[in-house]
Length: 299
Image (cartoon, rainbow, N blue to C red; front, top):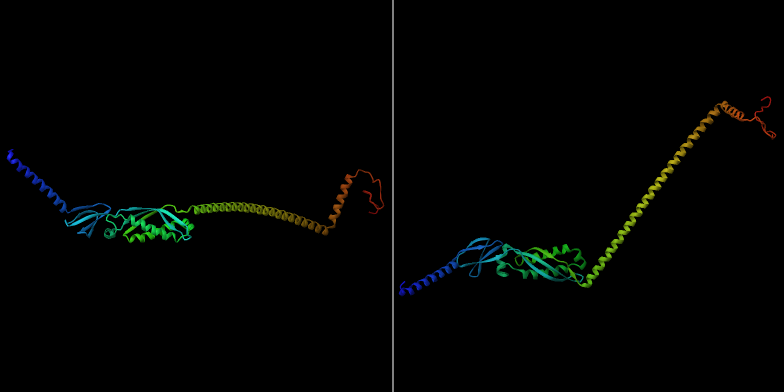
């Protein structure tokens, strides 16, 4: 290479490089293709003014417009020790986690007024504190514990209305246990203990009552069985007596109708006595006493 031409070559190279850089800068400035990622919206501005919202995917813009990526994904706001007071003036606190997202039709409004990236955690924390105070003021301390599900639903409903002013919607609320003052917690524990003892005593009483009822039922059944047996025996005896009376009645009737039957029985008795007599006469005979088997003349 001719030394005289070397400076011209260097100058030419520098010019090419400068031209390339300028071209790249112009290309970058005039590049019309943009990409909006999933879970986002593209806020299109023109000289600082919002002129449109691009959905996910490819966006083609003229060089005088800019595209800002705005997230509509679920976000999370942590509220530690949100404080309030119950209707019976008991201080109470709770920790909450609120999951929320920006409503898609409110992206331009939120971008313009509150956030350029969709983060509203500071607004959510403040709104949650206010809602918690308002809701807990409607409940007594015991009701706040016993109606936890209803309290959570009230907080959710009130927070939905509150966050809608900021263009956000509540996805869900995770609420941890309520915390009261130490003295009140002791009182609650004592009350729970007393309630458990009362229930245990009631259960024991119900058991004793059930056992007594069972014993009464058994005794009544046994008494009924005894009465049944007595009634059966009495009925049987009555039937036997009735049968015997009927037999005697029949015999008496037969005897009354036939005198010879009575005489026949008397003869049978005398015959039995004769068969059993040993041939000895009585040692002592009293006046008028009959002598066995001695029949006076004429009889």
